[in-house]
Length: 451
Image (cartoon, helix red, strand yellow):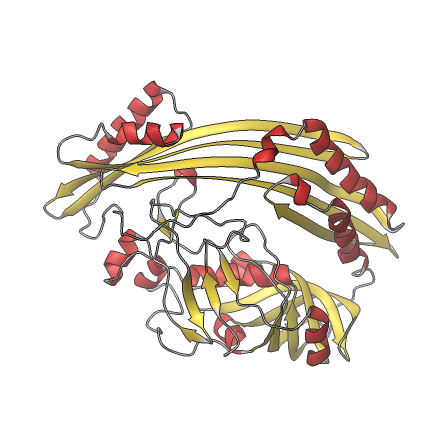
């Protein structure tokens, strides 16, 4: 048992008569280096730790739950957090559906999510990677006039959960990443190209490839013009696909469904997507950077098929949303660290890959628009109604080849229509930080607004 799990377990042992306790404890270390003009602009290194405690007290009208947290594992702070959680429970609204998770017999996957060599990587090497990233980007194309961001970062996070219902679980993971924003200029107009890469440890990162990708994405947009308005096929860049899937993920949460806030509500068993669409949430796949063997309540994560060959099969549930829906948890509780409480959500979405390369997909589409990046997702996409309208930039597709760069355009449809209009799913899966992986995705029709 890890020291962190022992600590969580010891706090659970302090449960009073008539109350249940759930403890979530976490520690982490993070380093970030930013380069500017060949030198270190900033270097930060931080260690964080904290604890969140939930107290459940039974009430004739239902359970009352209090929560408190603090960014310290000091004994006196833990005492205060426990006292505050108990006090908060006194004022909570009773809810007969509220309960803590209990072990359900599903075995934990055996996952290796940490690069153990990360702890021994010298700071000089991290600095060198950030500086080299900037140097390559500046040197590879004369049109690059500025590097807005060139950084290397890494983190190691450990968390542990214990409860009076029998939960005992801990996890540890690492991540290293590169980030670069290159600004290219021609004809008095600037274009920014962004690229990033993330892996479990720094040795798996490709500095040169990341730099060249950012520059390529900036320079190919030089001379971009506003297109005319039309309906046409669109092809999403893998990172755009990941962004769209992250929005769809919120509509697949059992919590939003039970509250009537999802366009998927009451549609299980119906065709909701193209038959080539199979959407899976699988935190047990170690290729996902958000993979985990344990969910936010301490249950075993598991593979959940949400859309199978276009048919909606179900949603992801935590304990409370499952009780409201009359079903069982899918091991899909997520939480924002020790300062948050669990809720139902996707953790590691991906589309089952197709067989076509990006080039083959473009050739099949013939004419259309390739969407390289989108803006306004939070304001322009509604996971309740499914309305989809985002700012975009990209390139025109002519005879299956990328050509004229386009800017200041809006791509509009609905999420329901986008899913049904999928005509190609790429084989080029990119495992990205966040909720979803991405790959090239072709849509048969969307509204394009420009001039």
